[in-house]
Length: 230
Length: 108
Image 1: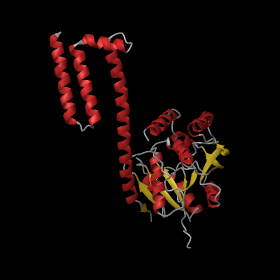
Image 2 (image 1 turned 60 degrees about the horizontal axis):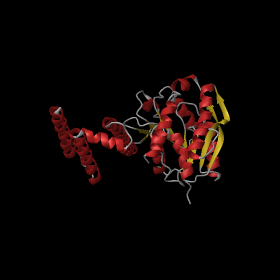
Image 3 (image 1 turned 60 degrees about the vertical axis):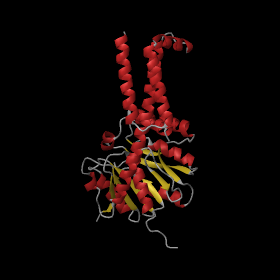
Image 4 (image 1 turned 45 degrees about the vertical axis):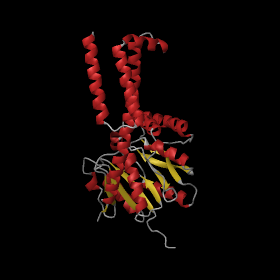
């Protein structure tokens, strides 16, 4: 049987990252020419869309801003349409290290897990603010209480998913509550999961752009209400 | 007092008629609206009955009962509206997503 050359898709949600997205994509393209790179622009108000249009990149754009969860789902669905077997979710703000992708895909290809979750607490971080560290650690309890799954890092956007084996893997939380929803999906679909170390780079740029700590209240509300009305 | 009662009944009846004709309701919803109309009608015409009903529920006054019911109904309406908004949001998301995938391009 002919092997699908492009069996891996790197799905990148994009929102107002005109300063850095080109560097992120150039690095990914050089390191992984055999992977499909799908960038979904969530209606950026700056020049991100134009900056992301590098040769070989699959570029999509939401006509209105829907949120990161919706953007990831769009990218995953498009990856399925392209015939990809695995999807890696990767941030566009330069926090994730492209070198880690290889180890994520290796775990999926060897059949050790159906979904691989990056953990900054098993790996390493640069310049992580102390308040963020404590908030992320607290969120592990929230995830454990709501899903029964204990993770060392439950809100890391760096993941690799076997989308071929799980065609019903679907994110319905449009905004940031999707991270908790994904853990719920893992439980509901009986997916085998594995956390592996990843390296996160917190730069002044990414910290300035990152979401406010108070937004975690909105995330919790979104998560509960989203589950209630399902 | 009688003028106030007449005024309230007219306002209530107009609201009931407008609401009944402007929305597509299921039979259960229609019955709920009619029951609400009848209850409010009785409370306006015979306020003493509201006190008796309130006593039955262990509440001091009829007007307190009405306030409690209104607070509960407002909360319920908020939830119903929130669910409706979310359903619309999900539909909009699907439309946008389908259009986005259709207009995807490979950069050259």
